[in-house]
Amino acid sequence: MEPAWIRMAHVFGALVFLGGSLSAARLLGLLIRADEPVRAASAALGRKVYLTLTLPAGLLLVGTGVYTLVTDPDGVGYFKQAWFHVKFSMALLILIVDHLLVMKPLKALAKGGADPRASEGLYR
Image (tube, rainbow, N blue to C red; front, side, top):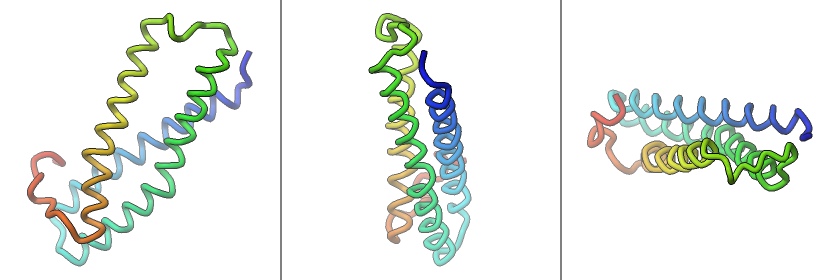
């Protein structure tokens, strides 16, 4: 049986990662209506929060998940379970979409790049 703290760390990482990703997406939606100086400063702050809070939580999530998958402490046989393949596919999809739709535009805005109005309908 695996220690309970590993499962708790996995759930905690998932909550913080998803919460940070959703709040960063909401920030992008608000930055559409902001003026240029406010937009750059807010995007830089949002990116900093993303890198210091959301990214470590994502690494904790992935690390504890890989540990549980490799050690298989309960003898579940995750690779034989259909629900696990669905969960794993959805997790990969979320990571890819999060990077493409949230982190790249936030990074570009923080560096004074792309105008968020070009994707206005996407972040509403």
